Length: 296
Ligand SMILES: O=C(O)CCC(=O)C(=O)O
Image (cartoon, rainbow, N blue to C red; front, side):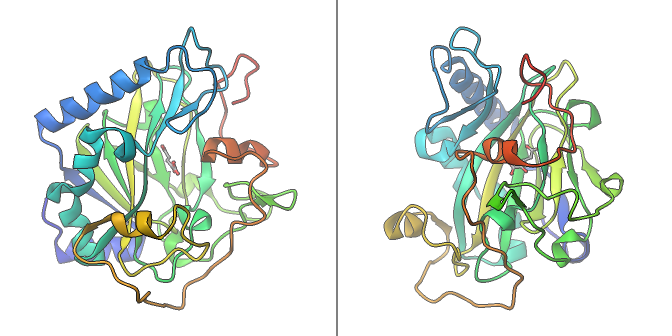
């Protein structure tokens, strides 16, 4: 899908764009089948590990997976998709030819209970030296208001980094009492399986639990300009940082811009994933259906 100037203007103004289909039917089926197989393999898994983030109601006998972490590190189908030009071309149109993958994940909202993600800015987790930091979402299922659509606050990427702390520690979610945003204004990002969405990492976004009888799986790539360096340091070390230049060239000269920054410290009380981090937030916006006790 070619990105036109009108798309760039829309992105600059609103902080997101719906790119349209980027996966062929064959690639979509392969990604869906691999995701199903990974979820099946969670049978017997006792607790969160380097691959799985599990719903609070998960048991080894009845697996409930809420996220597959860094699928590109473990599963070739997903490593191939990281570098697929059908995916990186629209990204290059927005942030240039030199692109680094910062991270990746597959968020799974299972039918009937799949967990919400509370309102947040990705940039609050990983501020960089410049603004060319994007979140790229590839729908593995049709997504609509019923099965847990992602909502994005239009224009919020142009505003501040909001406070994502609770009780003095980072909690990965906007403090609803400190930040009076009208989330009714959020744009609901629907689409078809195989479509791609892109939003700026400072765009405020979140999504409700899945009450429908259809699962909603979203493959997410965090992509940055190769000269954007993470201000909190190289999480996985220098070699790994440079290994994930997925298009064009890396280098040793960060590009510095006057960007709003708030550091994600002290670290979250509950570590391991955004779902865990957000357990510590003072007041939740979305209803959590995921555990027998009714709290995710
Ligand atoms: O899966 C979703 O709807 C939200 C994803 C997200 O914001 C995240 O994982 O950081």
